[in-house]
Length: 284
Length: 189
Image 1 (tube, rainbow over the protein chains, first blue to last red):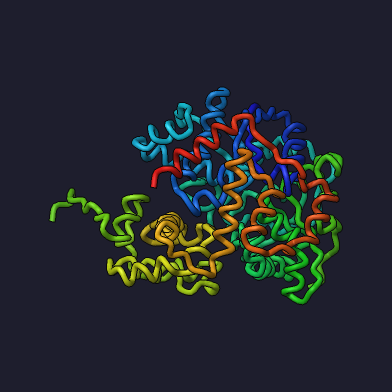
Image 2 (cartoon, helix red, strand yellow):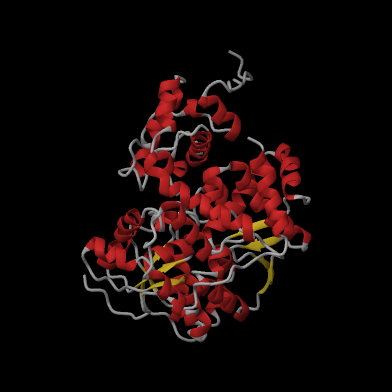
């Protein structure tokens, strides 16, 4: 299998381990990743927050670059990137009259032929292949935390269920884990307020953490760099807000799968988390 | 009334301008409150999303201004919970984007949203310069804009020690192309 790859900015920086583990796992599954040439930032929250045309043009340049490289599908592991790319693609598909203006803005032709997929969808396709390569079952009770953009809005993402999704839980089960039922699967972590309203992140992410720990989770599994950052990097703020000392580790789904496949911890970037990857049965 | 009749939104109202820009028909909102109920930052907002829409529906300048000057439009983090649940399938975050853009254009940004606006500006400034986000550069710029100099000073070393704090920007080759995008797109209006 060969697929285009768009790491995005956070996978090159503060969520490097998501990039490392995704590449390691897909390589072990014989998937060839072709990085989109000279890719630019998708604009994340800030582009659409201030200027709609910018929020269309930045993703359009990325997709145009992918087209020029002969790619038909691009995996964007970052949930925000995949959301922005899918949204732009859909808008230009539904409104072909906007294409000329966008092509003029990016100085490149845009055909709209590249499909964007998120990491859960790609891993979902590979689940049998993953199952056949399990060396060390990940026998932990796991709270799969999807966050917002992996499954919403359904008209854009068109994958899994927007309320009570199951794809990550299925993958966790496939690699030997116990999927936990809990009501915070798709509750927002506070997203891009990490810097500007850390108090909101502490509150929202605190509810998610408590919701997992209270139900006996040993680990929280995520597939979004923003969610990971808010639950991991912002742990001191969350614990301060809750008046507790919750130490439950937060892993990317690709790290969980990689561990189960027997890949080296360093190859999966496990040492890069701020909350140490140590499993303790959660005290209820 | 013919079923083929299509009301063309008037650009003399905020409602009309939002619809022209986004295709979202705020007139369809019947105030069920589902968006307000599911909004993760609803209790932080000065008014819920349903109220913003109600103000816009009046098509009265004083009401429009209340919406444009709200803090709420800046607190929306596009989690898309509202859009997923809206029985009228309205793309609420997209409509709020348009209201926010007009708020910015008309100099009506709520003072409490200063830091959020500064963040977005710092983020975009970084992309315009490098083509990709330079996290360290963005944070420095944000601190310069907000005066919040001590923010996260203890976090940086932790990230650095774990190899996650790039001290040099990742610069794309076609920086000129990205700069041109900004110029062409932001240049008009």
